[in-house]
Image 1: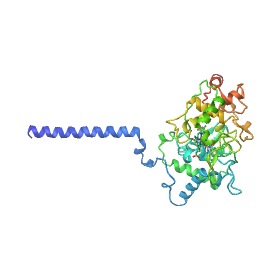
Image 2 (image 1 turned 180 degrees about the horizontal axis):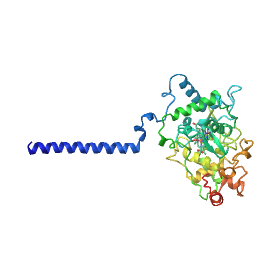
Image 3 (image 1 turned 60 degrees about the vertical axis):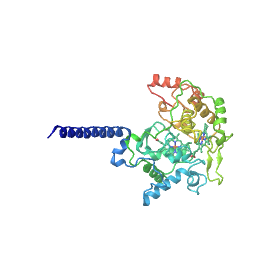
Image 4 (image 1 turned 180 degrees about the vertical axis):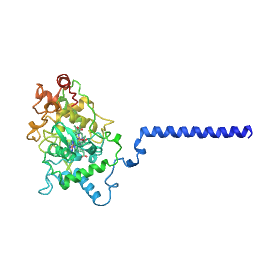
Length: 337
Ligand code: HEC
Ligand code: HEC
């Protein structure tokens, strides 16, 4: 073999080597950025759409029905449903809070939710199933009465959630979960400052009286109410100032704020949450039985009893840091909300 041929071969071999290295590095990088691509079972982990991605047959029909129940709730499960089907007590839809039928990240999305149940919950001091958790929202956020867990409706809602989840990579499960982050520090939530923010950022849709705006065909709300008799009741998560602030910061004003690009500051979200939660709303019965183990109660739960001596006003409006400090030093428990 002459020298020129040898050099040419060497160059070729090095090129192949360099290209292989580039390929391997690219594959490794892709794996870290998008691991789902490498998991055969997880080909479909993008947000599914009932318009295009439904399975065939009875299962597809059930999922579609579940989607209908969570997005047009007053018509099918609420005050406007047929007698015997009226489980939810107000005219909100599940999707009034779980935006985009539970698929919007930062709005307590259901993507990944069924994977987390059964789970231990302090409110019951027990293990709860996904159906129990749904009924928690039915009884509080929707001010209604629990659906039988084996009812056609409950099974369809769960089927819808499982379909949203199916094939989701383990490390994507948490991505959609929960609400935005709000640091409360030593802020005392102030409904008076909240009113100013409400007037400039929220009133145009939710109304001066917080009663929302109905759709022109009166089937549901265009803009849901934030307080008053057709709103969530006082036992709901949204009635805790910190939870409401987390939701608001990540999602409101609607169409503007997202979890990655909020409009309000933490303090503004807390003040406006205090404002909307300073009005009358339906009262949930038997809330004194929530959190049998009182130390597990979120510190911003506005109703007692509590395992501490802070005032009801401070539990509702803060400042929360002293309460968090108390639980840490007294019980060794870290409170975030
Ligand atoms: C007024 C607002 C509101 C309405 C209406 C509402 N929810 Fe919720 N829901 C919440 C909040 C707030 C949470 C807790 C989110 C958090 O703290 O991470 C939650 C949590 C949940 C969870 C647990 C999610 C998880 O990640 O573990 C499920 C499931 C759920 N809701 C289902 C429903 C269903 C089904 C409906 C309708 C029947 C409904 N919700 C109506 C506000 C609402
Ligand atoms: C452009 C109209 C618009 C503005 C402005 C707006 N919202 Fe909303 N809000 C909505 C809509 C629409 C929904 C329900 C989403 C759905 O049904 O898909 C909603 C849902 C909510 C909910 C949960 C459902 C309920 O009724 O409890 C809360 C809480 C809320 N908004 C608070 C606020 C606050 C606070 C502000 C001001 C910072 C605000 N919104 C600004 C349109 C708006």
